[in-house]
Amino acid sequence: MDNSESDTDVPLRGVHTYALRAGRMTEAQKRDYEIHSARWCLPFQESIINFADVFENTNPVTIEIGFGMGRATAAIAQANPDKNYLGIEVHRAGVGRLLGEIEKRGLTNLRIVEHDAIEVLHTMVPDRSVAAFHVFFPDPWPKKRHHKRRLMQRPRTDLLAAKLEKDGYIYMATDWEPYAEEAYIELSSTEGLASMFEGYAPRQEWRPETRFEEKGLEAHHAIRELMFRSVRRDEADERP
Ligand SMILES: C[S@@+](CC[C@H](N)C(=O)[O-])C[C@H]1O[C@@H](n2cnc3c(N)ncnc32)[C@H](O)[C@@H]1O
Image (cartoon, rainbow, N blue to C red; front, side, top):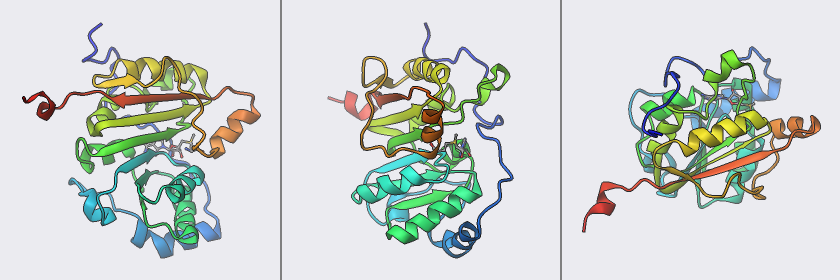
């Protein structure tokens, strides 16, 4: 099989992996959004950013795509002050909620972009700059006609792989078995990535339970975890 090309016709841009919900914001979320977004949110921009400028240090950067209400995001950032985190989400209520958590917990290593993660990666994130991607319970898009909206498929996984630094990894958890199966195949077929485990990864105990995981467990769904590491050989590695 030729791994360099997707066998689907999914476009990288133009088909969204999310559906914007009208969902009301609580008063607290609105207040936190109004007061704190200027400090902790990076506006979407049409040019590459420099993480060292953004975080004012050179610690490794983990990007979380689709943090929802940000429950796991805030806890992970708090537990790892020597790492930087960039959460990307289109759902404003979740952005407001996470801004409140940043302030409550006094976090300085977490920033937010309220925008489509695919566009953010494409336009703002330098190649080979990301230590890890966290994707927790991405929208499963169960209907066949919606499968093209799934995040974890080529060419979107090609984009993620291009942004990973040497030895960086992609970590995904899902309660939707058919999506886990498809994502495993797609990630295995993405050039420059290799599974870190024979099959699915074991439960990563450091990951707090997320809101959507809770729903999946209530529905008696099995949780699947996937971890793929960057194995791309950089030109610099080839030099004698
Ligand atoms: C099913 S929810 C999971 C939320 C959270 N990770 C959890 O486990 O509770 C998926 C989230 O991903 C967000 N999302 C999906 N595609 C996205 C994209 N391209 N950019 C930013 N957010 C996205 C959606 O808005 C939604 O909030």
